[in-house]
Length: 214
Image 1 (cartoon, helix red, strand yellow):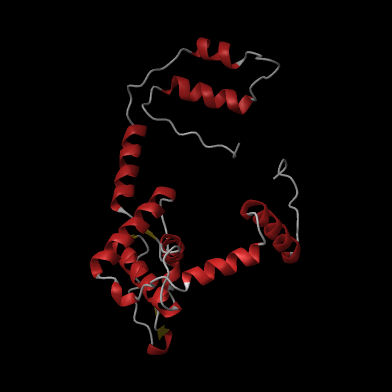
Image 2 (cartoon, one colour):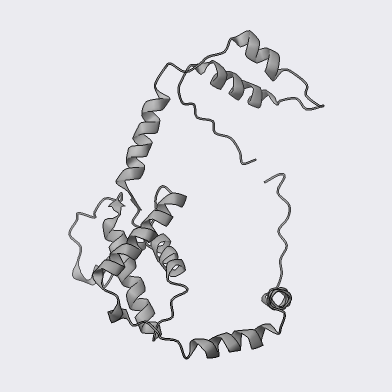
């Protein structure tokens, strides 16, 4: 926070004008005109209906969504799956908005069902007026956290490595000689020198270093 530059605030009108100008440079023509030509061309192309996709297609798309989300985060919720599904089907032209939403909901539901739920089920009886179409109002579906068994297994492997002795360990004298050096006018801060010393001398096969970004 101390070194982060102040944020610059711009109105939506200013941003829109800037985006349009940048788009026209890339497109070589007026951006709204280009967009209209694209829409006119798309009007003659075949469009997909929700019923055109079978269960195997939904399963394949859900697998891609889960893989993409899991590559970026260790846990996720419904809105993470929703956003990634939107990205995956962005280039598909549907017959109607309802068709797009139906396919989107099917993929998200399947991806959610294939995820490993981490949030415990709410096991208390709830009056009917606290139950709606999304389920228990005391545990909204968009606040349920998921992960995958692959990620949990990977975490267990990391924990096992972090407790395993057998990695190389340097002497305190050797580490101190290098951490105290002045290289091109730059010297390590005390906390950096301590971190390097602990890692270099731990003898662990895996060390964890936590520090501020940058």
